[in-house]
Image (cartoon, rainbow, N blue to C red; front, side):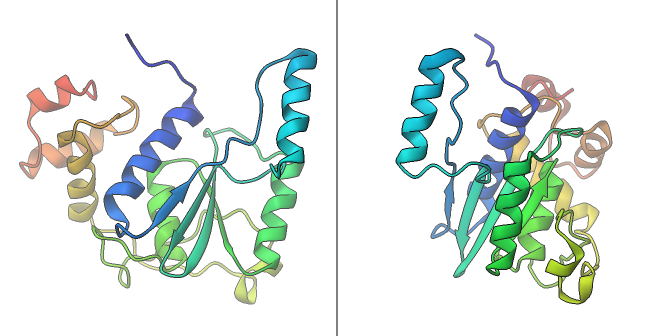
Length: 201
């Protein structure tokens, strides 16, 4: 039976899988189911109960605890927009000095780890810095600017994606581009058969 989902749900599964792969084993990755999708009065009652138990409107999709740091990740489809509650949560988190990032792709998630100084087991931390895709007010950033730096190398990215293709974990078919498939094949990291088996190509 084929797994059903939304682009954001597929992205979240892929990001969680990647974080579990590359972060230290001591890191904690947590998702708070803070919304009830059931319509009608019953759904409204369940949502009210959750709020009473501490659920916070606008809470980020993922919270990462690693290296003594806290990073909140809000996952959105390519054209998804933040709700007012999500914007308020972002502003509150940033005002307290915690990390927050808007993630629209797996690459955004990897970049957010580097931007916020989290150690990974796959990509060296210091040389891997890139312009943050963090949607935050300029006043919340030091000097009002994003810290720009070099992106991960093509070899590092190809090796990272190849590990995901060669595993048996969930992998959205749209997660890996044709260009990345070609890069992995050219480096001998995956086989055409494996890509077809995983539904990537």
